[in-house]
Picture 1 (cartoon, rainbow, N blue to C red):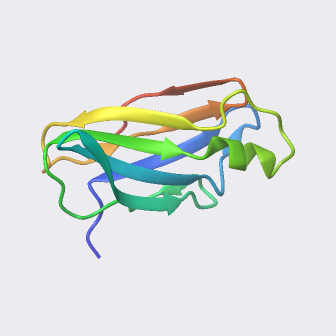
Picture 2 (cartoon, rainbow, N blue to C red; picture 1 turned 90 degrees about the horizontal axis):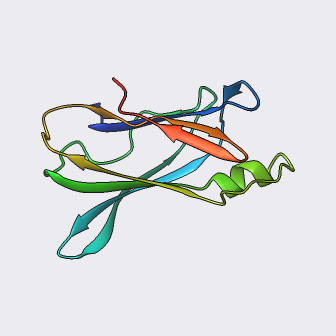
Picture 3 (tube, one colour; picture 1 turned 60 degrees about the horizontal axis):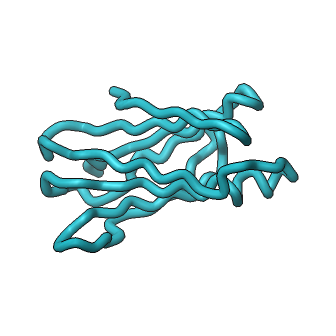
Length: 113
């Protein structure tokens, strides 16, 4: 099985562990509108290793994370019911890893490897 060009990893920094069970969807900006091109749910290691098709065109993409549902499952209040990360995929031959470091009242991200 070929690996998706876009992967993600969600870490619950408040709990100090991977965030298991976070639903995420991948969107592509085309012709002025967003089209869903992939989806997945983090595993026990907080990873989604296949978040979209094997081939993608250069362009603007967005990953939406259902963080509110994740925190609700543990009866944890959160300020962010969802997190959306928008980025540019410049070279479709490269791998794009987009991690999310998450807590109930803050988040950060970076381009991983």
